Amino acid sequence: MAFGQQRLKGVRIKRPGCAALPRKIGVPCALNAARAAWAALLLGLTLTTAAAAPETPIRFSLDSKIDGPSAPYLLPLDMGYYKAEDLNVSVDAATSSLEAINRVAAETYDMGIADINALIRFRDANPRTPVKAIFMVYNRPAYAVIGRKSRGIAAPRDLEGKKLGAPTDDPTYAQWPIFVKANGIDASKVTIENIGAPVREPMLAAGQVDAVTGLSYNNFINLKEKGVPVDDIVVLSMADYGVDLYGDAIIVNQKFAAAHADAVNRFLRAFLKGLKETVQAPTAAIEPVLKRNDTAKKELEVERLKMAIRDVITPEVKSNGYGGIDALRFARTIDETALAYRFKSAKPKLEDIFDPAYLPTAADRRF
Image 1 (cartoon, rainbow, N blue to C red):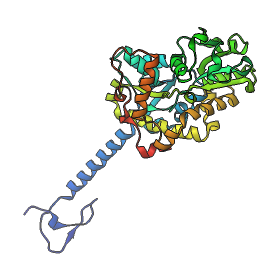
Image 2 (cartoon, rainbow, N blue to C red):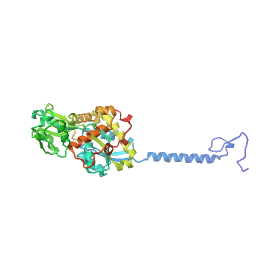
Image 3 (cartoon, helix red, strand yellow):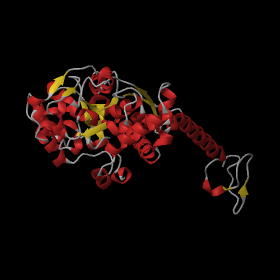
Image 4 (spheres, helix red, strand yellow):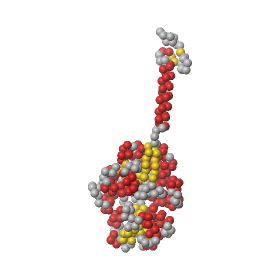
């Protein structure tokens, strides 16, 4: 028997740097120590690797300038909710839903917010477009006809014999045929004047037109800011007058989603947290907007945000939670869309436009 291997019954042998071990184990203490050292080294490497895990970058496009309704997308950025999900998110302004859709389709942006009705038409015209909606933000759209009582506007049929200012590329004006049919308006008696979006409120304020098409929270606040008396402004929300469509949704490039499915899910989880906080405390949530828009007035942007929230929180959302789409209602909206738009191919089904796979859990989405 080699030196140091002798067996002494009942005797524990202590070696430098080792705990007392029963000699009968037969495993040299040096080997135990080496294994422990390697385990510690590997653990350290694992922790270091985890700590250095790269954040997934996500380029997110708004569909408008930065204003009150931008708060739910910016709040998670400033509060660190995206970062907590290992995401490096950038949020940029845009001029329209169409620009946001084009950005995501072209892969210059990974995700964005856009009018789902514009997306439906875009995908019909470009069937290979790798873009789908994944989270319904506005359960109903903010489409509206905004008029003035002093110009004789109080109800939809009052538009007959009047002049309506409408940018031809305006998403609200795109729904005009639906609004006309739902309210029995004789469209031949309404004079449509094609005007640029920047002069929409100035022309209405000056009485050059009797009403305009637009978004309720934008045009109302802009008119108010221009000094038009509030009690003279009439907002005919299309959703209140028979136009049962969905509104803005978060969209994603499908190639990006396929490669980063978990990141997309984590983005929606962080966004939902910010959305809920925005709904609960809009005045506090407006701060990220004011930080990025030097000309914004807090009082007006808070009011604009509160108006937008009314189109986010509907009885459907209160019953079913945030983010989803009701299949039967969607089918009806497609039928409505066909009144104003001629599909080049078959009418789309819900799965052609909306993918619920990335939504947070039903429990998390509960109102």
